[in-house]
Length: 411
Image 1 (tube, rainbow, N blue to C red):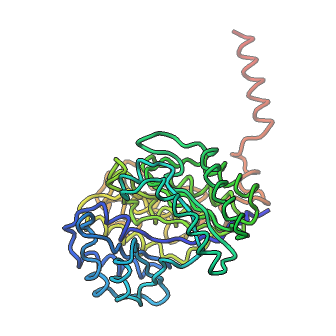
Image 2 (cartoon, rainbow, N blue to C red):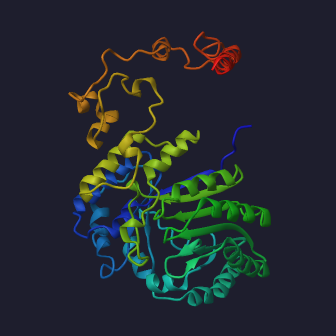
Image 3 (cartoon, helix red, strand yellow):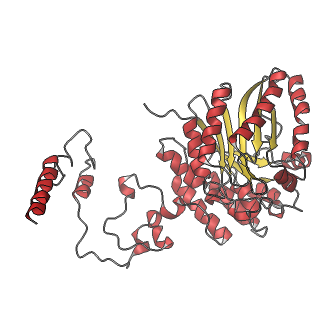
């Protein structure tokens, strides 16, 4: 039976989550160039930056200039982080092309499981976050809301206080769910956040499975996962496998996997799952993305030029799997050793010309011959290669055993 996957809604965050931890000296024109290039990749949701105070996040001081100069692409939803009313005032001047989502969507209660992190990051306590739950629910009730969302941030663990079990997370969710129940409002959405990179596939599996068993009405899942310990994309895969076609899964990533938070203690090492790697994974799972992988990879290279260093992604270095005949590597290519030579998947054999070639004669294979003829590599319902003389058979094993026994007896 074919796997039934959830609807996946992906948002690209490199212009905000990525750039907020990079140099504030990156020229505006470079950011505009990158945003324009991203707009041409087929990505549907792109965050352009944050309307925050330049005093604490100088990397975002040029957001107005970026929005004045970039070229919006029809069909792309452009978003921004808007933390307060002052930010909203600034953002309104750019709507459209911006879609102003602050205050829209389901009414939501949430808090950080790590009180230390929220004090460092937002200068407010977990207790302060929770103190607003009652007013949020009352306002939703007054507006006639029928559905609501619950969630936690720093869901999986904290660099400052340690691990959080799934039991702890479920208790936070249960407490919020009960409050919405008391108001007669159905909870249909859940969110988890991982600013410090503690996520693990086993925890995602346990948490999402328990939520689905305990609250069947919850069909919208949101996961903001960082990649400090390399677990984000594996956890994203697990999340997809835990859900089905009745569900939606909202996720974010950044081009090149860059990103981080100065308050979490790991800086640029925090990262997110690389957008190009995530899209490549989805395509391999048979999930259509509508994304042009070549253009996305070129964006990753442009990002590296802008940063002056290598990003964290993988597909931009090794290339996507060459599943089409015209993209297969040349069997007689010489040694390919450097990252620059590896870009031949995009730029062709000129990048490895003159490399060491130790083969005394050209590589030949019956599989290459079949490929040239348009024949399948393996016939699952046919004879090739299972019935060929070179394919080991049971009688070959029996003969080898008998021969070995004879030699041992003679010795």
